[in-house]
Length: 130
Image 1 (spheres, rainbow, N blue to C red):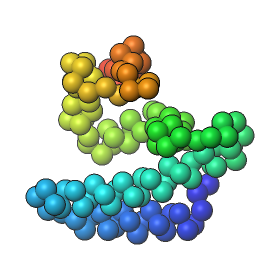
Image 2: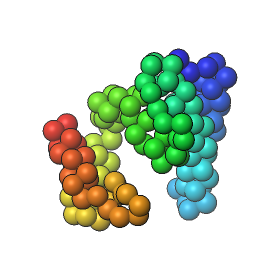
Image 3: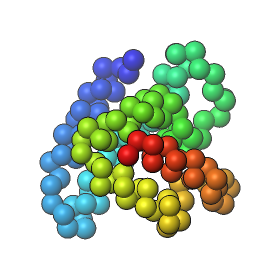
């Protein structure tokens, strides 16, 4: 379970992000940075939480792994998608499906090289939820 300190941090920074309501570039960027700070702090705590659950992780934790794979492992992929649907993010989900399907954006990279087969696996999982 996440510490009370971390939960207070999350709530405080989420409130701060929610107060940024404009849509000009400066305000959108401010909101992005505020949310990024929150997420960055959270994903750095996830490896410790996974280890508390008895999940063995490598000694060296890379940010890219913690921010993606470990967060999904901690939260559960279906929980993430269910929450997106619960918050009426179907349009966003469909946009992700489109950009993966049309190869406009690559989700999985290895040493800077796209991993099309891995992106297709993600696409297939999205398609089963829609």
